[in-house]
Length: 191
Image (cartoon, rainbow, N blue to C red; front, side):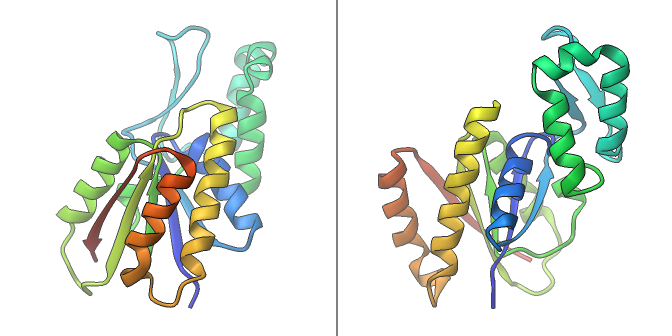
């Protein structure tokens, strides 16, 4: 049976959506999420981000930023990113609000790894199905998001290729950590 993957970044905009796009095109079963309290996109300055709720459609964000300053948001790549996102799904989703079950939850920074693990551990256990939470740090910019998407997809495909993931995952992660020369965090939780 194919594995079910989730990938989580902070706002379900850049890193998780790039991985969602890349992994789904390669046939993996994938959903993407954010773990933050709200969606933040770059604004006219660092201290003035554009803030939305998680139930705001990507289409609304796209039109809102065109109305605010089409030139700025075209040059900084935010409109391009939102255009990609709106072709993948309607709106950002928050991991803590999802009750779907996954075999693997990828996170892209340690703070998000901790939030996902805390959320999963706080849930009432119903089936005792195992879920692996795996973190590879990915910087929040378009270039690193693309590289991160490739790494997460490659790792996901390696996991799909084994017969007994729970017994082989430590070896897979150790080998992959050596290959990419980045630390990988791994924890388990249960549904």
